[in-house]
View 1: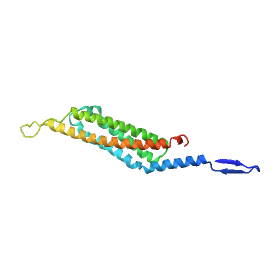
View 2: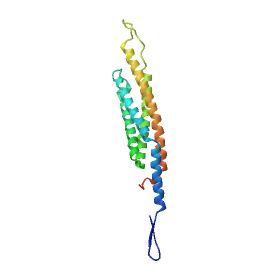
View 3: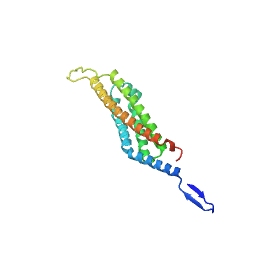
View 4: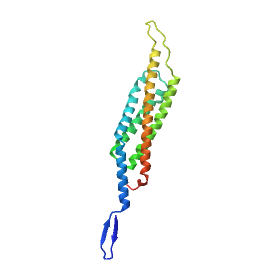
Length: 189
Protein backbone atom coordinates (compact mmCIF):
# COMPACT_ATOMS: atom_id res chain seq x y z
CA UNK A 1 0.00 0.00 0.00
CA UNK A 2 1.39 3.38 -0.97
CA UNK A 3 0.42 6.56 0.84
CA UNK A 4 0.71 9.95 -0.77
CA UNK A 5 0.20 13.22 1.05
CA UNK A 6 -0.73 16.27 -1.01
CA UNK A 7 0.23 19.86 -0.17
CA UNK A 8 -3.25 20.48 1.21
CA UNK A 9 -2.61 17.51 3.61
CA UNK A 10 -5.04 15.13 1.96
CA UNK A 11 -3.97 11.53 2.15
CA UNK A 12 -4.58 9.13 -0.71
CA UNK A 13 -4.04 5.41 -0.57
CA UNK A 14 -2.96 3.53 -3.66
CA UNK A 15 -2.12 -0.11 -4.08
CA UNK A 16 1.57 -0.94 -4.14
CA UNK A 17 2.89 -2.60 -7.29
CA UNK A 18 5.16 -4.92 -5.29
CA UNK A 19 2.27 -6.19 -3.17
CA UNK A 20 0.25 -6.79 -6.32
CA UNK A 21 3.14 -8.70 -7.91
CA UNK A 22 3.58 -10.82 -4.77
CA UNK A 23 -0.11 -11.64 -4.64
CA UNK A 24 -0.14 -12.51 -8.32
CA UNK A 25 2.93 -14.75 -7.91
CA UNK A 26 1.39 -16.56 -4.94
CA UNK A 27 -1.82 -17.14 -6.88
CA UNK A 28 0.19 -18.41 -9.84
CA UNK A 29 1.98 -20.86 -7.52
CA UNK A 30 -1.33 -22.12 -6.15
CA UNK A 31 -2.73 -22.59 -9.64
CA UNK A 32 0.38 -24.41 -10.87
CA UNK A 33 0.30 -26.74 -7.87
CA UNK A 34 -3.40 -27.47 -8.43
CA UNK A 35 -2.82 -27.99 -12.15
CA UNK A 36 -0.35 -30.81 -11.41
CA UNK A 37 -3.13 -32.90 -9.87
CA UNK A 38 -1.31 -33.82 -6.70
CA UNK A 39 -4.03 -36.17 -5.57
CA UNK A 40 -3.39 -38.63 -8.37
CA UNK A 41 0.37 -38.65 -7.79
CA UNK A 42 -0.07 -38.94 -4.03
CA UNK A 43 -2.60 -41.74 -4.37
CA UNK A 44 -0.35 -43.61 -6.80
CA UNK A 45 2.55 -43.37 -4.36
CA UNK A 46 0.40 -44.54 -1.45
CA UNK A 47 -0.98 -47.44 -3.51
CA UNK A 48 2.50 -48.51 -4.61
CA UNK A 49 3.62 -48.43 -0.99
CA UNK A 50 0.70 -50.64 0.06
CA UNK A 51 1.29 -53.00 -2.88
CA UNK A 52 4.97 -53.42 -2.03
CA UNK A 53 4.26 -54.09 1.64
CA UNK A 54 1.42 -56.52 0.94
CA UNK A 55 3.23 -58.36 -1.86
CA UNK A 56 6.27 -58.89 0.35
CA UNK A 57 4.37 -61.04 2.89
CA UNK A 58 4.96 -64.32 0.95
CA UNK A 59 8.71 -63.69 1.24
CA UNK A 60 8.41 -64.49 4.94
CA UNK A 61 7.48 -68.10 4.15
CA UNK A 62 10.15 -68.57 1.47
CA UNK A 63 13.88 -68.93 1.92
CA UNK A 64 15.18 -65.96 3.92
CA UNK A 65 17.52 -63.90 1.77
CA UNK A 66 19.17 -60.48 2.01
CA UNK A 67 16.00 -58.67 0.92
CA UNK A 68 14.04 -60.06 3.87
CA UNK A 69 16.96 -59.74 6.27
CA UNK A 70 17.39 -56.03 5.51
CA UNK A 71 13.62 -55.45 5.38
CA UNK A 72 13.82 -53.80 1.96
CA UNK A 73 10.13 -54.15 1.02
CA UNK A 74 8.96 -52.73 4.33
CA UNK A 75 11.15 -49.63 4.61
CA UNK A 76 10.79 -48.87 0.91
CA UNK A 77 7.01 -49.31 1.06
CA UNK A 78 6.74 -47.10 4.14
CA UNK A 79 8.82 -44.38 2.48
CA UNK A 80 6.49 -44.43 -0.54
CA UNK A 81 3.48 -44.21 1.77
CA UNK A 82 4.95 -41.18 3.54
CA UNK A 83 5.84 -39.42 0.27
CA UNK A 84 2.33 -40.02 -1.06
CA UNK A 85 0.70 -38.84 2.15
CA UNK A 86 2.73 -35.63 2.05
CA UNK A 87 1.66 -35.06 -1.57
CA UNK A 88 -1.96 -35.50 -0.53
CA UNK A 89 -1.52 -33.04 2.34
CA UNK A 90 0.18 -30.58 -0.01
CA UNK A 91 -2.94 -30.61 -2.15
CA UNK A 92 -4.79 -28.95 0.74
CA UNK A 93 -1.99 -26.69 2.01
CA UNK A 94 -0.45 -25.06 -1.04
CA UNK A 95 2.44 -22.92 0.15
CA UNK A 96 6.06 -22.79 -0.89
CA UNK A 97 6.99 -24.57 2.36
CA UNK A 98 4.74 -27.51 1.53
CA UNK A 99 6.23 -27.63 -1.98
CA UNK A 100 9.71 -27.82 -0.45
CA UNK A 101 8.69 -30.52 2.07
CA UNK A 102 6.97 -32.60 -0.58
CA UNK A 103 9.93 -32.20 -2.93
CA UNK A 104 12.36 -33.36 -0.21
CA UNK A 105 10.33 -36.44 0.73
CA UNK A 106 9.64 -37.33 -2.88
CA UNK A 107 13.34 -37.06 -3.75
CA UNK A 108 14.12 -39.23 -0.72
CA UNK A 109 11.56 -41.80 -1.92
CA UNK A 110 13.23 -41.77 -5.35
CA UNK A 111 16.64 -42.45 -3.78
CA UNK A 112 15.18 -45.20 -1.61
CA UNK A 113 13.52 -46.81 -4.62
CA UNK A 114 16.84 -46.83 -6.50
CA UNK A 115 18.50 -48.48 -3.49
CA UNK A 116 15.67 -51.03 -3.37
CA UNK A 117 16.07 -51.73 -7.11
CA UNK A 118 19.77 -52.43 -6.58
CA UNK A 119 19.12 -54.70 -3.59
CA UNK A 120 16.35 -56.63 -5.38
CA UNK A 121 18.56 -57.10 -8.46
CA UNK A 122 21.52 -58.32 -6.43
CA UNK A 123 19.30 -60.66 -4.44
CA UNK A 124 17.70 -62.12 -7.59
CA UNK A 125 21.15 -62.75 -9.08
CA UNK A 126 22.56 -64.28 -5.88
CA UNK A 127 19.58 -66.50 -5.15
CA UNK A 128 18.40 -68.06 -8.43
CA UNK A 129 15.58 -70.54 -8.72
CA UNK A 130 16.67 -74.07 -7.85
CA UNK A 131 16.21 -76.91 -10.30
CA UNK A 132 13.30 -79.27 -10.00
CA UNK A 133 14.25 -82.53 -8.29
CA UNK A 134 11.48 -85.05 -8.56
CA UNK A 135 10.44 -86.87 -5.43
CA UNK A 136 8.52 -90.17 -5.39
CA UNK A 137 5.14 -88.54 -6.06
CA UNK A 138 6.49 -87.12 -9.37
CA UNK A 139 6.34 -83.50 -8.25
CA UNK A 140 9.17 -81.12 -7.59
CA UNK A 141 10.64 -80.75 -4.13
CA UNK A 142 9.72 -77.96 -1.71
CA UNK A 143 12.96 -76.02 -2.31
CA UNK A 144 12.05 -75.60 -5.98
CA UNK A 145 8.63 -74.10 -5.18
CA UNK A 146 10.02 -71.95 -2.39
CA UNK A 147 12.73 -70.42 -4.58
CA UNK A 148 10.29 -70.01 -7.47
CA UNK A 149 7.81 -68.05 -5.33
CA UNK A 150 10.64 -66.01 -3.86
CA UNK A 151 12.04 -65.15 -7.29
CA UNK A 152 8.64 -64.22 -8.73
CA UNK A 153 7.70 -62.04 -5.75
CA UNK A 154 11.06 -60.26 -5.86
CA UNK A 155 10.61 -59.68 -9.59
CA UNK A 156 7.22 -58.06 -8.96
CA UNK A 157 8.68 -55.95 -6.15
CA UNK A 158 11.56 -54.94 -8.42
CA UNK A 159 9.10 -53.80 -11.10
CA UNK A 160 6.99 -51.85 -8.57
CA UNK A 161 10.12 -50.16 -7.24
CA UNK A 162 11.07 -49.17 -10.78
CA UNK A 163 7.64 -47.63 -11.29
CA UNK A 164 8.00 -45.78 -7.99
CA UNK A 165 11.46 -44.51 -8.98
CA UNK A 166 10.07 -43.07 -12.21
CA UNK A 167 7.05 -41.46 -10.51
CA UNK A 168 9.09 -40.03 -7.64
CA UNK A 169 11.84 -38.70 -9.90
CA UNK A 170 9.41 -37.01 -12.27
CA UNK A 171 7.37 -35.55 -9.42
CA UNK A 172 10.49 -34.29 -7.62
CA UNK A 173 11.62 -32.55 -10.83
CA UNK A 174 8.22 -30.90 -11.24
CA UNK A 175 8.28 -29.72 -7.62
CA UNK A 176 11.86 -28.49 -8.00
CA UNK A 177 10.84 -26.30 -10.94
CA UNK A 178 7.90 -24.93 -8.95
CA UNK A 179 10.12 -24.21 -5.97
CA UNK A 180 12.70 -22.41 -8.09
CA UNK A 181 10.10 -20.32 -9.88
CA UNK A 182 8.69 -19.16 -6.54
CA UNK A 183 11.89 -19.05 -4.45
CA UNK A 184 12.07 -15.23 -4.36
CA UNK A 185 8.73 -15.16 -2.59
CA UNK A 186 9.66 -17.74 0.05
CA UNK A 187 9.98 -15.32 2.96
CA UNK A 188 7.16 -13.01 1.89
CA UNK A 189 4.25 -15.19 2.93
